[in-house]
Length: 177
Image (cartoon, rainbow, N blue to C red; front, side):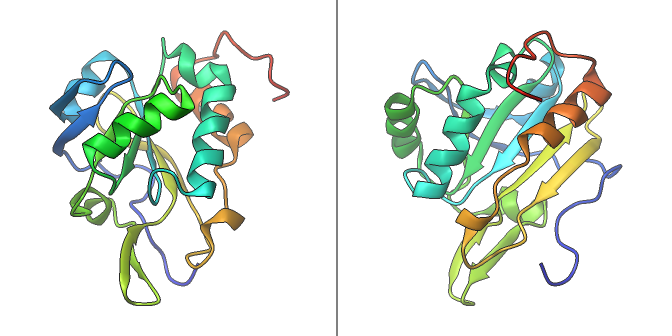
């Protein structure tokens, strides 16, 4: 990736409110602070619902059940897809993770991961930010390939280590980490 992109570890995570689609199909404007009241959040930015790279990414999150066990950390997706599309995406993939709709990419911009493919198409870099309950970024990963995001996928073992370091060991560690 050219130039430094994304908020740094140790920075305060920007607060926002956006439509959040849950696994049960509800859609509610939800503040990030509300989610952080329960437990730390792993905010995962991705390009769009139903793109092959994003299907692969979310299926990996779903299949590595320690994310879903959610007692210590909550995985929350963010993309420019609209709430109705998020509902179909959650149903199609059987996801248990809520997804924020960032149609205008203002959340991506606040986290400094918004860019334009070929300087034309606005989108968010695939990226992950682990945010503790005090609203501080404790880990970040940002895809390096802006043209072909299928070449970069979140490093699940590294994410697991970061979560374990900042929120404690996770109970469900049976997936080869």
